Length: 345
Ligand SMILES: Cc1cc2nc3c(=O)[nH]c(=O)nc-3n(C[C@H](O)[C@H](O)[C@H](O)COP(=O)(O)O)c2cc1C
Image (tube, rainbow, N blue to C red; front, top):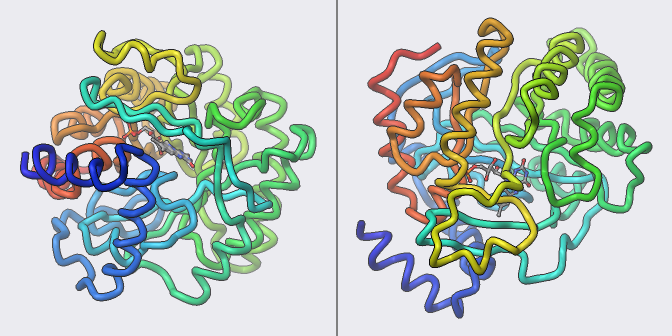
């Protein structure tokens, strides 16, 4: 309440009502303050072991909030049980022209077409080498550079996997952002099989005698059941460790009438309009794989009840983005408290 009524309006006023500037300034402040914050000061203790990793609780920061890993200690201090940085690409790139981020407060939603603005995989690797890990499991999301043709995508992903292999506790293969032209075609059977096959080989080489780092695939909420079933078959065939469900949607259902003028903005919609669909996808993945693949549930968690529903649908872990951006850091604690009362998978 305090955040919604006082802090958010002030942040927006101070940043000329530009959501991207609010985001940029917030991450900048967190990057500075995080260094001094006691690790896990606000963290709810609800430990689970998933993907062979020990998570202090089940609530993570979703990809895209801290693409370049600028504020890792701050996320841990705010109570997140894990952090996913990225999506990074082989090449540093500026992303799409601004404006590219739109806040829809009446719909409890965001539309973004950032387009993987990031400093590149090597810059993230250098930062992680310098600053170390956040003290909670670290996921690294990798994607395709915009200028790389689709038929050369494998090499792009492989480059990032290699560069970041020493630092990631898991990798998220992003083939589901709607904001890089053609990217979602990598969810198709043949393309995905080739990509996952090659990444598996590379990962085994890099691991040497050790255990390969888990590789997860992040899926779009807009796949049909048939397409998702096919994707899951390919994922299981190629030893994928888990599924992250879901990315943002191209659907515009659930936008409040007062914000319908923004529905025409291109990009992915997230937040409340995604809540029900994300739970459906999580349930589909869980049922279709007989619960054999760990699932990170993400999409429209705006309160603890939404996270509980994702866990009940089959998620082992959850992530926040839009809820956290619109309602502030108190949500991390509320959600992790809500989940702590539930049995884990
Ligand atoms: C501004 C913005 C940027 C995002 N960037 C990424 C990204 O780089 N990689 C990715 O996998 N997902 C990205 N996402 C998607 C989120 O990680 C998440 O899957 C999605 O927003 C649904 O969760 P939510 O409803 O809690 O926001 C982004 C979302 C937003 C709103």
